[in-house]
Length: 266
Image 1 (cartoon, rainbow, N blue to C red):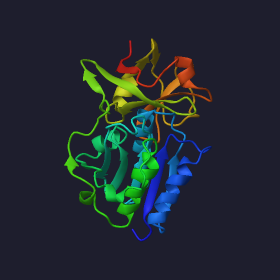
Image 2 (image 1 turned 90 degrees about the vertical axis):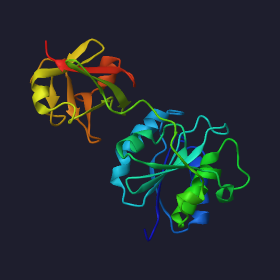
Image 3 (image 1 turned 120 degrees about the horizontal axis):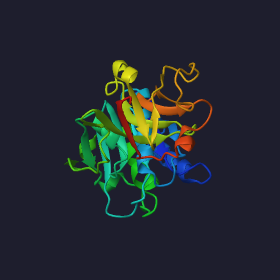
Image 4 (image 1 turned 180 degrees about the vertical axis):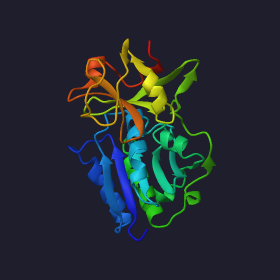
């Protein structure tokens, strides 16, 4: 890539110096880098939220993009730093599951532990590996350093609960992966799991509520009496539970990780 592209995804917010410091370190080593912010508004320490956002975003970027994701409650501990290669892109950050959804979808991934300290910024703060390890490593990669120069390949990286839903007899057991700012409840069910024929004869069950309305777009006319709730395939490719102009999560009192079942209508 003539102008290396590096993305940043963190829970740092924008009120403090953290994001700016990371960009400064990257540009000090790789002045030609183009830095794109995916978001810095991940809820503090919410690794699963960051994993979902990265999963939803990475395919929008070109081949060769380097993604730096830092949501790191284990910073300063014995948790490893890693570089992952898959989907013709590179992922840099802590080994805490933050890349697991991407690695699972794009398997097999090549993953390397970050061990070569010559690429670190000195001194390394025990509270800010985003600036002192992950940013300079990303810049080194952008300058042509290869992953094998950073450390040994590993196969035991930290994993989150698998993305794929579980098929039981007569039902599909899924869960809420993410709740967006509009209150839409994004599940781990995809169109490959719930076909149009299945939608015609089935319903979602969450918190004792049955949702049998499946829409193509948000403003589609209501055809069932589900209290304004409906399901729709969202832009990330997953089935979402939504409500017209209000928060479905508030209506359902739903939380991330909550069980969502799909089965035949009563």
